[in-house]
Length: 345
Image (cartoon, rainbow, N blue to C red; front, side, top):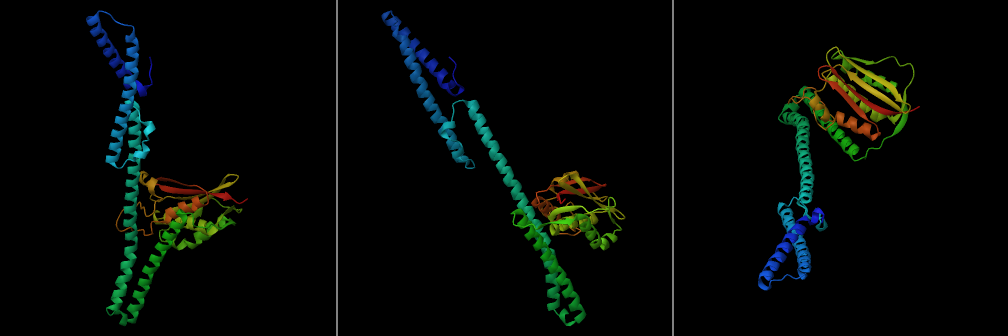
């Protein structure tokens, strides 16, 4: 007979019990009365069935309660995830089920560890970003209170510097507020049709002096004689482009170039590219560049400034438009950030 794996143990054990019990009784009776009745076949069958059901029931109970106790003792496992009907005496199946369960729990633990590390890193980053302007404001206020307020020139300069620190705090808080709104879908987009070429040119004009400090050229990839109209939130896309171009200036090389190109990739989509020949990004940093406060520059000075939220905001704004953002970079050669927008035509 062929049995399901679930009943293998009970079936074969019952077979041996019934066989040896019947054989022993037959031998005993043969030597006692020198005869063997045909009833021994029925006895064999009864012993087999009785042994089978008792063993199957007892072994299932044994395994279930033992496994249940293990789950309860470990505590991280939830016994309701191991329902009674799934308990089997097939150890191969049982082992596979437990291994699968352990792998799921292991993945959950690893996910929790990643989130905990992210939380710690986030708290460390935000405290670092806030403490510098806070200590700056505090130091100037304390200096004024200690007597410097009497000097009109010093008072004016220190108040100006303290105000700069407060503006920095407001900037960080505003960006954090925007990130929160973007993550929970609370930011309302005001879509409109506008010429993205004109928008890029206005950003170039705004950042011209900043680019001049490194003699970086802000250019288009070609001369655009016609408008390219997109349907998007103009203010938010301006923020996206400004952040990307400012980043290219921060990490751009002296006498370098930041180039913007816009092209129709399909009938309904426009692709915007911001390319530079700056420092580039190391391969190991690429997966995390859109994280809040994540910086490629790990130095304590963080010489280039910024809140560390720019690229995270860029990604969230683009995704809020149901569009995609891409990045390609080679360390020492440069980077290209690109994103899609809905064609307005």
